[in-house]
Length: 197
Image: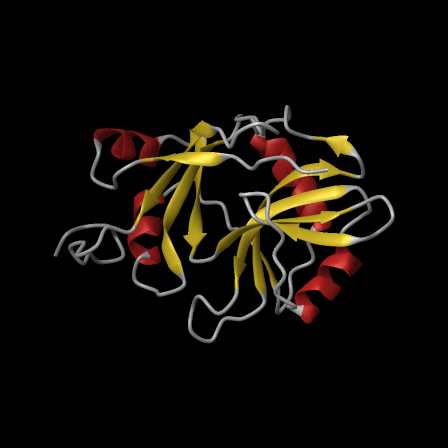
């Protein structure tokens, strides 16, 4: 089974909407890692495959990661995250997870994000090769400015807590309630409070 993952719309860090969402606790922010979109899928027989958002197989060996996923994931489950492998210096075979689409054969796309997150937390076992995205309700812009200081991160994704997951087998739909705030080249450096120096 394969479901095309949600693709967020884009937002600039200095927009009026960005300021509004920074104060809205109905939205959360997660760091956007510098990796490849990856959907680990464990079928009913226990076989593991890792797909990209373009429906191609990730063939990198990453044996320790695959072993951790096989041990952690129930059969009939699809997770959503970013594979960070040789894209950031010193970071190899690491999976950054932020959503769950199917759990033990149950399609979760119509559940709100807050409920999917609870289910994801019940599945994920963090370790050297697996990281669970941290959700921030207050200080989203501060998280953005902190995130662009490092090589491993590209900015943040802001998501509405009651948003569904509009996966489509026909096309990769842009999600109106997932907003990507990416690093801007030559962005003015800021302090950790998100203020310009």
